[in-house]
Image (tube, rainbow, N blue to C red; front, side):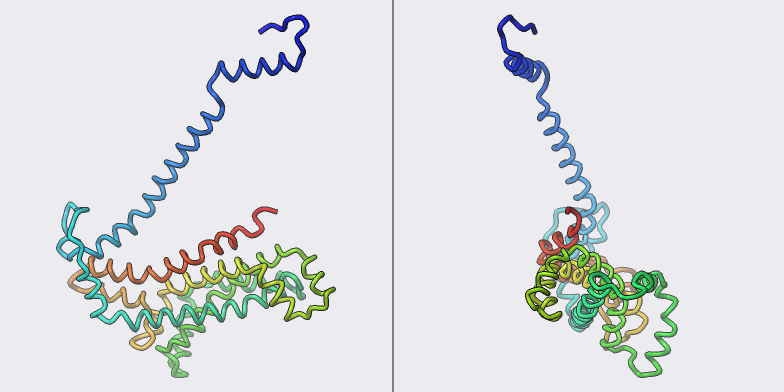
Length: 299
């Protein structure tokens, strides 16, 4: 392209950009193609990870004969026979025990973790790093290393097969990770907000309740959901320290492993029922969970 005499440089540059954009493929076309490919790849990976869960749900609506059919079939007449069988085996008390231990331990963890995290973040005490290291070091201790002392202790004091024993254990199990999570959320709170509340005459309880907690509410929701998942899925302590009164859903699922083999269809129905509370909790708290887990990601 040539510039004629009298033509302004700005006009020449604009014409050159127009010519360049018309000669080659538009840049946005390449970005759009990459976006479609990445979206397709994400959907393929997502479906691949979700397929075992989908297969479990579908198997729960089959008969035992259809569940063992080879090759497996995708088209069948759904039946609620397996779900009825699960309730006939008495899943109700196990669900109640899991719900009780999970809810009570999560509430206790939040009540204890928020003040502890406040003291370790906004108003750090002496040896804060040592305290935090002690908390996280307890998560490195294998559960098998403490099961014998716990079993002897619960048997000695007559608190074995007790739902409160399981609640206390779940609280102790989740408290370290909750303190670490809440500390990271509280450290993202601007100090100016707390200073302004102090200047306005707010006491410490008022500052915590009216200023701090609303700001870190998404972080509390994310921490609570993590505790719910860990408590609901916990199996080791439940199977070793409970029997008939305080057994939870994971212990109930073990009952499908018999000498005659696995009842795949009924086990799938029971696993689907056991998964529903956690899935519903995650679905309800998804907005708060995303906000909580992304706190501090962008400043």
